[in-house]
Image (cartoon, rainbow, N blue to C red):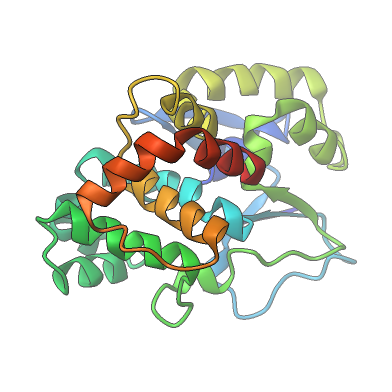
Length: 257
């Protein structure tokens, strides 16, 4: 059996959750280390050719375009415990981006702008959500790849255990009780990521203390709603629009989530 993994997307956990003979332990604040599994782990962005789904049981992780923004929290904060934290995103990318090849292009992008100015950082990511460039960001070249012969697991399924369990039940010797125990462990350590979308939507009704990725995503949502790009880097304009159109933006964002 083969797992085609993506950085930060619960790869070690999944190898254990779908295999009742596995051995796993926590690693750092959010991650896991699976020391024994029937799965062979391959990293998606390093593959030149994909495994044959007729000859192998293949679990394939993928992310839909609309979920790229939420996946970035996992990619930045969880991958290899480098901890590029969204609350200090631009500076952490500059300081730590060289530690992993997929983070490095983001670091170079931050160095091309005034990364100390959050308005410029918001503008960068707003534009980025429209069109992530595969040539510059190697992970996005393969992020959405699926195969009908694979067991395809999308980012969103990790927040919906019944759906995830249903999909993984196609794995030979899948054990539902073992999966439930493993999911309880995942939920205990990864609420920040598993509840990402709902936490974002809740902010519209509460503090509206949006982080830099959320603000950039709102700019993307608003431009999509209106069919034209906006000067979202202007803080006064952002504040005014969020005050006037908060419910409209939330409703549209919820339809995308």
